[in-house]
Structure formats: C-alpha cells, structure tokens
Amino acid sequence: MGSVDADAHVYETEVTWSFIEEKYKKFTPQVTTRTGGAERVGDDGEQMQYWLVDNRWHPKNNNLMPGTTVEQREMRNISARLAHMDELGVDVQVIYTSLFLRPAVRTPEAELALTRAYNRWIGSVCAEAPDRLHWAMVPAIQSMDKNREEVEWAKAHGASAIMLRGTEWERHLCDPYFFPLYELAGEFGLPICIHSGNGSISQHDFCLEDSSFTKFFQPCVGAFHSLVFKNIPGKFPNVRWGFVELGAQWLPQVYMDLKRRLPRFGRRVSENFLGDNNMFVAANIYDDISYITQFVGEDNLVIGTDYGHNDQSSRVDAFEVFRNRNDIDPAVIKKITDENPRRLYGL
Image (tube, rainbow, N blue to C red; front, side, top):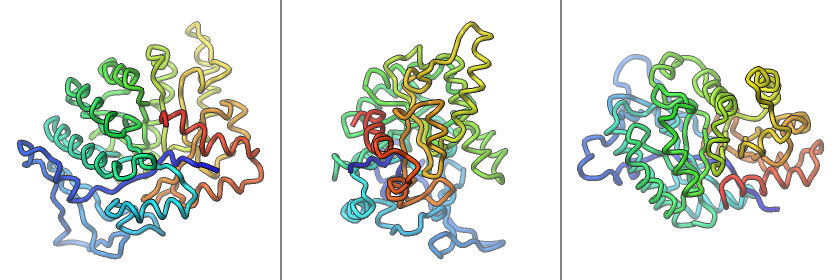
C-alpha cells in the first residue's frame, strides 16, 4: 500500500544559510549557547543551542523526534532518510520547515534573505530524490511583490505547497493583502498549506511560556473558520487549502458553528463541507475518524508523522499504527494515507 506523509520536517543547519545571497550575508543566523544562569540541555543530551536570527533567538537542538538520527532529521544523508522512510512504509514525504513555524525574524529584508536561502537549500536537498521528497516553500510575506519570482522558482524545483502560519505579521489570512499570493497559488497549482504555527511576533511572544495549543493551534483553527466564513475559497476556486499538524477532531465543532452562523448572513454550509471548499485537513492517528467523517466525509483527510519533531502530533510509526486500526474501513485508510494527500499536493 502506498503512503504519503503529509507532514514531515527538516531541521535547518549552518549549510542552509550558505545559500544566502552575498548582499544579505549580514543576516546569516548565528548559533549561540547560554553562558550564565541555569544550564539547559537539549533533546540530544548536549548543551542547549539557539539560533540567533535578526536579533531573535530560537531553540536549535530541541523537540527532536526519538528514533531518528541527526543525519535523517537535518537531511545531511539523503540515503539514510530514504532508508528510514522505507522502514516506516512511507513512499513520499512532504517536508516543512522547523525554524519558520514561528516568527523567526523582525524585518522584511531579513525575511526575504532567509526564506530565499531556505527555499534554495531545501530545493537542492530534495532534488536528490525528487520522486519521494517534496517540499513546502516559505514565502516572504512582507515582500509580496517578490513572490511571483519565488513561487515560480519553487514550482520548477519540486515544491508541492506554499506554507503559511495561522497569523502572518499581524494580519489574518483573510486580509486582501494575501490575495496576490492566493492568485499565484492557483496559477502555479500549489496548495496554500496552513501549518500549525504563528507568524505574529506580538501574539507568539505574548504566549511564549504557554503551550503550542495557544501559540500555534488556536490561530490556525481560527484561520480555517475565518476563511470559510468569509468565503475566501470561493474567491479562489483554483486553490487547494491544507491544514497541517492540527489534528481533525475540531472539525465537527467548526462545522456545527458555521451551520448555525452562516444562515444569519444568507448562506449555508455545503453538505460536502471540505470538498466544495477545496480544503484538506491532516488528522492525528488517534482522532475519532468515524465520527469526524459524519460531518466532513472521507475524501479530504490526510495524515502525517510530523517526522523529526517530538510533540503531541508526532508519531514516527503513524502509518503502521493507522493501518492497523480496526475501527476504520480499509478503503478509507487507503484514501487518507495515499489518495487524498496526492490530490492535496498535486503528486
């Protein structure tokens, strides 16, 4: 049985930033450690390291998935990554950033420099196995006029998605500011994939000591609701939308809310709630799929391992566990693990 991991990750390395253009070298991230105060240890057992990026710092060797090696997580050794995929029964991975799930930078120029470098690095890495390794490009949100060139380049070099976070630079995803990017997504056949994350410095840092539920999950579910409520998918009928690393257990609640809310505005929720909006959602392997599909059907759910990361959505053997669930019809399992993600990512 084929399978597509709809949510895998790579950890950025010093090699990533070797792709920074010469004129932007001043923005090269630095690796630092704490020299005073309480010592912290990373998930690899070594002293905690941090990326210093545009005068913001972010953990580097933290949230590491057990059962993976540094060569696999950082894609230093593509053969090792592919061999592990074979062990896990995964044919294809769609790879997302780690650093840019949060507001990594402060300024438009730094964002442009580092997202371009990341895209070229991950594009070159995945080019070693283009049939099995696909990737989500990271756009420069504050340089919207530069994104046509970047999306065109990414599409030509194996990108299968455009990644956004639940909030971007103090803007909601329904803001017309993003419409040019959505137009590009439709033109180049790349889905807009909202990955669990937050691009708002003020919102992210306000919740800095909270869990990812507040920092990352809530903005993304709110974005889903707002996109449907404001009929943004209807304005861009050629765009596919993905919602990644959020689970799917929240879908029935959002569906019922919109079913009651929209009639007040002369609209109704479609019976094919996800399909008619070209929306796909990555479920967790422990979600109550039978219950969820009563509301949203079975044709627009996918799953992922969260490969490389270690949090509540992570499960390196997700596909084996999911295939062995006896409460889901095998035909539905086939859709969720293979057919649906291929439609989402245009594989």
